[in-house]
Length: 162
Ligand SMILES: [Zn+2]
Ligand SMILES: [Zn+2]
Image (tube, rainbow, N blue to C red; front, side):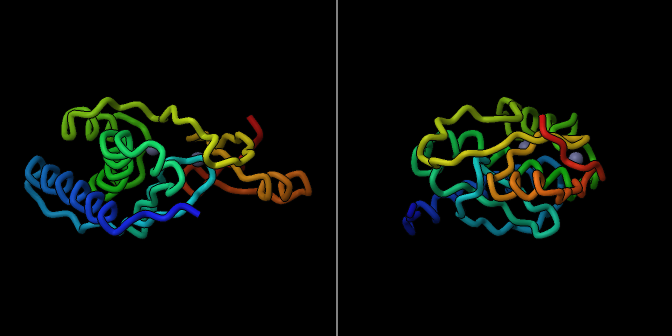
């Protein structure tokens, strides 16, 4: 199990808070501070839950790539939340998100991270909807093989194997 220490949690909260202050200054408005959770979540480094105003950071990858989480992953996921609050349903890594990353946070806007995923020791399967690429766990992949279908809530397309 990956345990995230209390001091790491405080550091992450501070980073999130700094990014929000920066965005609030840029847009001259307030944003509700998001919740941050640390759970293992497939091979994604981070995930933004737009309706919950929450970001999840993959605890196993966080431990191995701490610096990249602070410099890239946290701004990446925070940008998803802010874009959602500002513009609603737009392309996940579209021009609004890129603007947030590059102009507001001065961070290179690359949609993916190149982490060594070996700490996860996970086998995943790459699927695609109409708007994104998604890595599914072997459990979900097996369900699809048995006929289950998964719908992307953003673009309303069924996931298909890439
Ligand atoms: Zn993203
Ligand atoms: Zn989609």
